[in-house]
Amino acid sequence: MRKILCFGDSNTFGYIPGNGKRYGINERWTGILQKLSAGMFEIIEAGGCNRTGFTDSIDGSEFTGYKILPGLLTDDLYAVIIFIGTNDLQKFYSATEKELQCGLEKMVQTVINKNIKAVIISPANLNKNILTSGFSQMFDETSIKKSFLLAKIYKSVAEKFKCRFLNLNDIVKVSSIDGLHFTKEAHKLIAENVFSIIDKLVI
Image 1: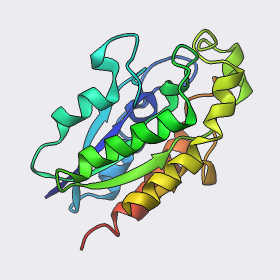
Image 2 (image 1 turned 180 degrees about the vertical axis):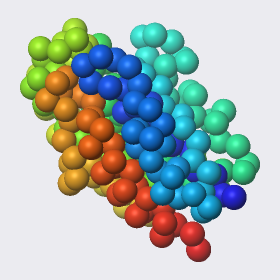
Image 3 (image 1 turned 90 degrees about the vertical axis):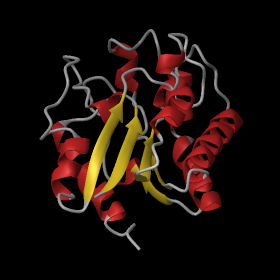
Image 4 (image 1 turned 60 degrees about the vertical axis):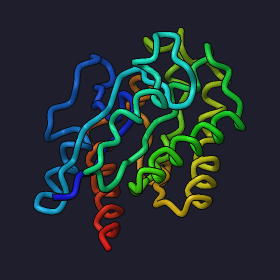
């Protein structure tokens, strides 16, 4: 059975806004995706809380996406769903639009160089509730503004490398609880839309 790696941060891990626990396997989008694709794909979950995508994390290499990903690219992978980048917007990093684009391009190149298909998901925009949440020490107004640039950047990279692309802003919004993570209902919609993409990947 073809294997698909879901690589991302806390929104791939299944972080529950408000209590910090993890959604159950039948509630988080990766688990729902496995059910939807039963008999077609094996879904491998690789989400990590507070994981950056393209910036060296202040918490070390184990929280730095571009350093972790190569070790997960096994020869039996058919595709990688790249859903990361929100934590690069944290005020500690001051990542520029160009740095975000170059970082994503390098990550996609790493995947396709292994003859693995890449699917790019643009994170949903942050909202102002993040400024009064438990994440207020990590994100600021600039972080919110930068989040509105991601869809354009990610779409551009997807077009450059001829990858499938999903802009989450078209289907869901982040929770009003913390302005960063998703409700169960949003996870279900993400899974359904991702499935509609991977269902067409098979040649």
